[in-house]
Amino acid sequence: MENIEDSNEGRKIKGILYLPQHAKSLALDDLLKDIEGEIRYYDPEKVDDENLNFKFLLPMGEAAKERELDFVLGFDNALERMIIGYLNGEGKFLVLNAHQQAALMVDHFLTANGPDEAKEKTVIKGNILSQQIDKIVIRNEGRYRESHVGYIPLKVALEKEQESGLTALACDDRNHILFNTDPEENTKACILFVLDMVTRLVKRESSIYFHHVDLQIMYKLYGEKTFNISSEGQNKKVFDRFRLKAPSDSINEELVTISDYKKELFQNKLTGRKGPPELGPMDLVQLEFTSGLKISVELADGGSKLFLHLSDFSDCYNRASFPDARKNIHDRLLKVVVSLGKMVINLNN
Figure (cartoon, rainbow, N blue to C red):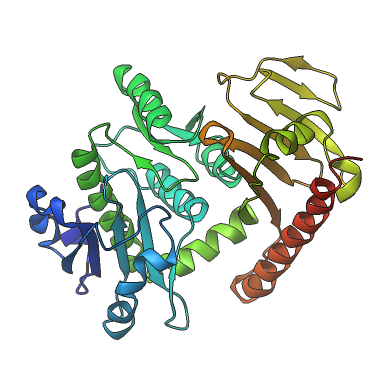
């Protein structure tokens, strides 16, 4: 990685680390010696970290705006997930969702080679993450591996790559970012990585927000939505409906591929090719359509929860067009959800 001190060129980056109280034992202060930074610790008994989102980092929002911070980096109590907060072009405090965060991390991982870093790198991607990650890996000639989502599957996949002596990054749509299979060492690695990434952006007179927008321009603007559609006594029925009767007609889309991990079956509707998916069994079905729309339906927690994951993309031609393009993709996904809702409501048809 680039040397942080050499890259500052007269301006130190500014940020806050937001960690659970037990992380004090990691002695992380030394990692911040070359930046204008501080660590704030939270009481896990008083902070809900089930979902790492804007609400989780909200206590850092005022400090971020008042001090014009370059980043806020938070970790859950288990030190297995992370989330990045930032200021947009108008000084508003926002956070990256897991898909956006993964895109920025993967881009920096593949493009910021230092003289001592391996040139060949592997990205392990959770299979619900949007295809923007695939595009970033392909353009930057990285190696690609897919994994089921979750800390344990990513950890197992990362161990396999590292046993082969390969440099790898693992990520998914649940805010897991793994460089190391030990949570404490991985926390340190993530902090150093984000510091390096932000330093590089500041050196280029950019920021997390503007680089996020630039990635949407380069690789198309991706929008992702996750919905909890659990219904007591209906989850399995709804899940099987998506598996056995793909909703092509209700959303006016042409289905291209079906990945049914429960059946361990992959099918390309256009070519007729069939076979097992690369990953093992899971209560997950994924549908991909010619427009680029991707629908993933996940039956979780022994069938007590049912999640609908949507991903689609649109053109974003420049920074000025970003707000409208983001609204358009948001509206499109909401229309898909409405159509899918009608299909779920009419289960008995």
